[in-house]
Length: 141
Image 1 (cartoon, rainbow, N blue to C red):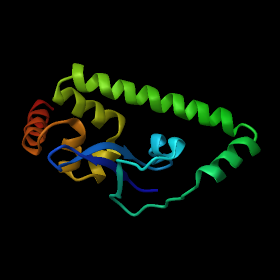
Image 2: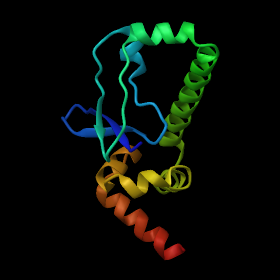
Image 3: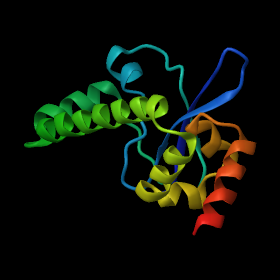
Image 4: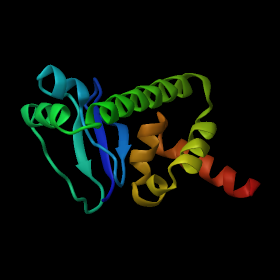
C-alpha cells in the first residue's frame, strides 16, 4: 500500500528522485542487498504505507524453499532491468514533455500522490519547467 520515492543526493547535495514505488511493488536497493554494501539511495514514504523488511539470509531461504519463487524473482529482476533501461534511454531521447506524458499514461497514481518537486526531479527537469509543461498540455486538451 502507498507510494514510496527513492532518491539520492547529487554532487551539490540536492535530492534527486530515482524511482517511485507504488501499491504491490517492491522498494529495494538491489545492489545494496545482494552485494551487502551500504546503500547510497534513500527511501521516503509519500503516503501511509504497509512495508515489510527482510534480511538477505531470510530472502535466500525463501528463494530456495518456496516452489516458483526463484522463477518469480528472475522475472521480477528482468522486468526491473527492462524498466530501468527504458527510463535511461527515455531520459536521453525523449523531450521533457514526452517523459511527463508517459508518466501520466503509465503511472497516473504518481501524479496524484507525489509532490510536483519530486516529479520534476524524477523527470530531470526544474519545477518551473514542469509547471510550463503542465500548462501547455492543459491548453492542448
